[in-house]
Image 1 (cartoon, rainbow, N blue to C red):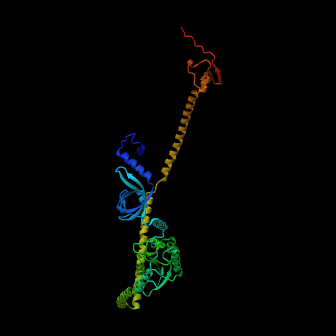
Image 2: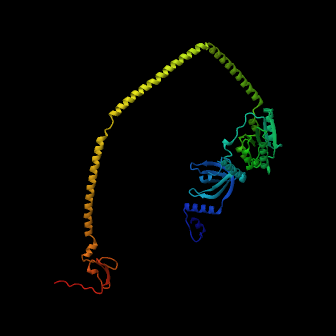
Length: 455
């Protein structure tokens, strides 16, 4: 191998390397020297080729390195990196031999600072999505008008004060029930799930809001736990999630019936302002009054028109009687005329049928004649074939080898079964087989005499 050249003693042997061999050797040294390693840095010069491969530069404040992530690995990344993203990559150190560029081959990538926690988030999100918990068809519609809203959050959370202030300002008539629970820390997920289940079991609320303020992924992790997601999915009361800031997303957001960008936005989505309801009611009242006036005017005109059409019951009955007589005449005429047409058509069809009726007797006579002739031809052919068969039988009998043997001939074969066709094949000591018409005889040659040539 090219890298073995570096192990040779340069004092004893002067080795001249082509550039390609040098680069190949360096690439192999780098690959053997550095195992798969996690490297952190900032994305720069990111490019996604038409082949699906990713090319970018990974840099920090003091240095940078070129990186490539091939399509087979990039398709499992879970996100598309952008310029300036802080990431962590698991890579092999190598060299792009054709250009001699030092680079890293990325096997996996994740967002920096998230590590295993973010990977767990992505894995749970993928699994629950495949189960259908995020499917739009399973989500419930948010009611337009609610009387009671349940809020699942910490009583000490600033998000609760924001939600209560928004609800008081927009819809002071709504009754509010608070289901207190911790929103971060160990065991918070189970307590959030228990509060949601309790609110759903009480069945006092038309709508539930699950909320808390913003924070890091660690702070919001309780809302990424599977027990919370499944409790929300099985909740029969519609749920709005208002967790964190607008850019924060949790598993609960994906499972909830509706996601609000902030807790305050959740309160605004859940309610319609009282002034809006009053304006809507006034608008509909105005429309109803106009519609009723139009309906009264229309019905008044209809009444005048019907009054004008009203006539004496005797005259009405006479008109109906005349209509019945006229209809009966039309009915008789309509029933009689098709019957006449059908009778005429039937007679015409019978005439045509009689005209084209086939004469069967001549055909039967011809069929009988052909049948008699066919039987005669078949007997003649059978007799002819019988005579031909006897002739072939006689010829075959004449060619039967057994008949030749019966006339005094014999067949002579050597011990291998080959025919003896010439005296030159006979050698002393050979065993021969003599077949006659009666039997087979084996014998051994002791002496072969060659007849003297005639003078």
